[in-house]
Image (cartoon, rainbow, N blue to C red; front, side, top):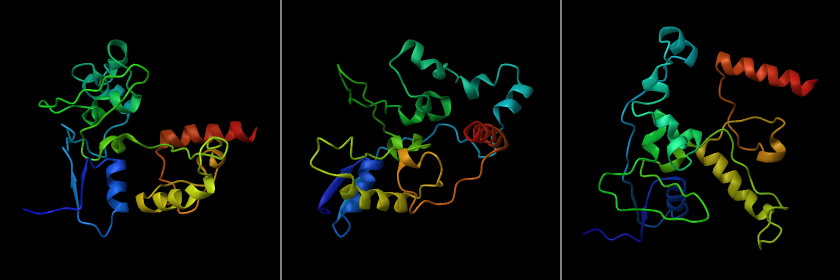
Length: 196
């Protein structure tokens, strides 16, 4: 029987970073590891292509076989990133799961997917600033080295733009990802409005 210094349950962001911080120790990282039921290729057609081919906007792809995308009408709120059919595996529970969360004052989300909620993260991660930390015994300059290490280790892509005051330093960023033609059109319109 193997003996470990630490056992971490869950390979989401918190579990992975706990393991990273424990380098040099004998660590066992456990994960239920639910994966997507359907494998979607990266060359998935755009919504406009789906609409052109199928007038129903591709119900299975966009709404889901069980109308999963309409979750927020009938059930507790789920982020748009988590309620789409392709992403629902992130919040699915194993059939044997007895893990229930009961809250009164907030909405809790848990994930049994491989990699946890990190599967749906993206588009922006705000850093604390000194004003937000005013009543805490820690200051932003003390957190900065950890933000930089996180940026470098997980490979955050981005650039220096008008969001820097909200997202913080651009050090260690990877080059921005290439944009699709649709996103390029939206971005160009945005740039025109910002300049004017």
